[in-house]
Image 1 (cartoon, rainbow, N blue to C red):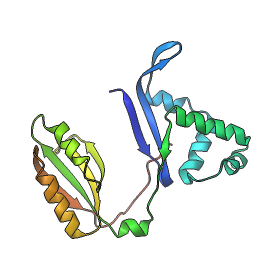
Image 2 (image 1 turned 45 degrees about the vertical axis):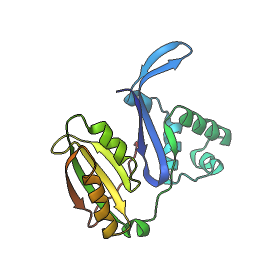
Image 3 (image 1 turned 135 degrees about the horizontal axis):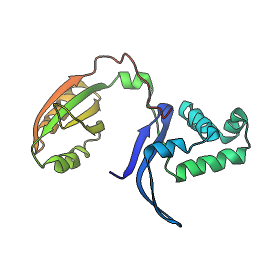
Length: 185
């Protein structure tokens, strides 16, 4: 399906890949996700890698570390943003703050043809960090964060009472053993 897919990268850089029709002055053509990444040159990759490490790195520092002119870095970042490779910049909470939250994965099975309505209602719950359609036992899997076990309990009741939700199964995160931010490379 054509469209943009955001990829949250380590330390705050948000990149995206594009698949689908694109309008240009020369007509319509297709860009695949693979081609979008393959068309990046060594300088683009170095810029992205540095920004994945620290999205607040100045263009002057990037230019010095990569060995190109500052104007080159500025124009490359602008192009990467314009082309949708860099979709934006975001805030990442410290491990101490995240460790203070109660996190849970919730598998959701929905009744036939109720998926879009359920998604619309779930999108209003700000504690939901990620919602994915999945194969297997569930139709959707979501990850949510709550400030307390009591709030988590209320959220699970709210999710379970959404019209169209047939059943849920919850697993509370006890600890993180491996955590790698999503990286393009």
